[in-house]
Image (cartoon, rainbow, N blue to C red):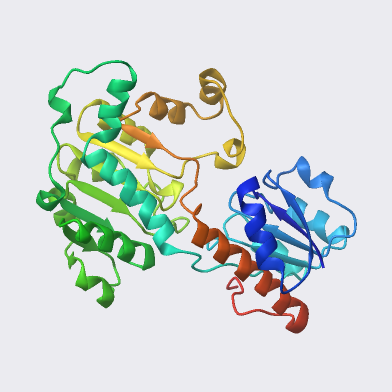
Length: 335
């Protein structure tokens, strides 16, 4: 098969080639994400497409694929809100995904950001980067073993996050509408309000459900959080009201915020901007970045580990092979 893979950076290419060895497909790589402009650059004779997060697989682009003879589509992501599924179904596409490429990859980024916030290393290093070697009150940190960590959402990633924090001696609280028995080894379940009022750091690991939990973290929820707490979001951009978070940081209600997800990612990822350009596209993100080092933003790279990329590539090619041989696969996106 001739396969086009979107959103593949240079360091991932050898991993994709290795994963492809059992199948001997012809691979074409694009570092760009699919959008309405570059869809027209589709190579001739393609059999399949591998999508990535923030690829815009809308009705127009899916129809374009169909018109060009693309037979199969998979996404190397667990989420699939970047795909117009009703249109895909109408066009006859059954789309495979990667349900759990590496929960530890995502959890480790959230943990690393949390460590940097709680131990104040981001703040301290920013001071010394500006040749400021004064020791100030903001550098006083709470030891992890004296800290309370709140995990909202205790599925696979939440579980791994709890495991990380428990390993350094923190007390871990959990909240989820469905309790995970496995997680109880590392955390104690409580109600949401108790978690918010007691936690020095709150880490989000819940799915986004359209129409139900937009801006789950808003001014009202933040008001219930412990003064000086930190918020971590490596889950979904739609869950957090970034304006409310910026205000809380400015007002010192929150010490900090770290996020790997944000609005307008599809227009920003794989590109660079100056402050004026970014402010024009998404003003609140520019405001957040200006609050560095108390707000840390990463460009949706929680997946970017050796293990996760390997799993993404291997499962994607296996999904494609199953679709070719059986017209279905074990990891179909549910209808």
